[in-house]
Image (cartoon, rainbow, N blue to C red; front, side):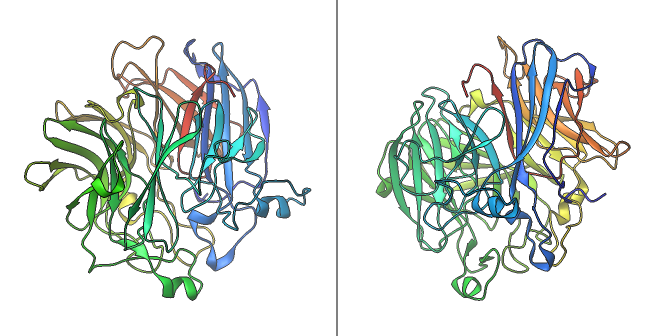
Length: 453
């Protein structure tokens, strides 16, 4: 079965079967977001545009209490399901499927996407509450990849809008109101999927994928193209400074979907990220045939204004995650998924169901030692993004658990694995057997019960 093939409906199940023992200190919800087209879309289907479906597992007292999957009730979903219209479902005509991430902030569960669409709030059972603008303080759309300052609890984001030559650095307080918005001029109108956060800077990626007005006018699904003539650059914006204070550093041609972490060391800024040699190069919005993603380190010298580039690992890989208590601070460990199929990744242009970009390895990097360990899953398995959650109380950076989904082809369903983050090669502490298959998707979160819903 193709890993991208959507599931056909919403289900729920209770008291899930478990092999092994769920750690007693895991109390919360594992959530994962991703595209799940509600109807077949023919040759114009693109992975990024499938309707959002959030999958969730409730864990408490050593039990997996329930599994649910729910489409986020945006306007297109409501029409397809023939449900009554709801208020506050569309913002300014921009209602791109919020299919990229699901996070918690200030007691609210939010489904996210980039490119100018508002977050959608979900309740504790994954029902859709409606669009959410941080109590009227958000001036436009938001991002799919916020990052949190561990010291203040502030949520930072970098938002962009199709065809607009600026991006917004947005700061949302721990209480849930936007407290700062800086408009940064970027004439290239770039696609910016992620950014990086340090103690003092937001790193803004003004790279070579830019908005193409002619492709938009012709009806391109994703009107963004690689521009080989554009000089890519990364800007260091002081998180408490004005947009005019941003300092730009030219970088070699590359594309970044996902940041692992960034931090300051002396008078340098160190960035760890997954880099692609190019993106959207074969046609507008294309993510295949762009070369293999690899793990890199970039060091920005604030004295000389130069950037040093160092290859960490050439193995094709994506979806880096860390212990987020170390966001913007020097960290030692990074977790990633990998498979050679990622070299020709993600999606074909003219197929309703895309060929698989299967990932069947989990890698743990020790950046201090320059080493890595890996856990290999069966060849036909599809492994999802690794999500770190600390033990309670945590004694070290990797004192915690890795939660990740892995398909079980023999039973046509998916398992949720709970691994000891200190030793990912050990047998799972617990394998939670889900009653359904999770299609290949994007990002998710562990939301502890200590964070109110």
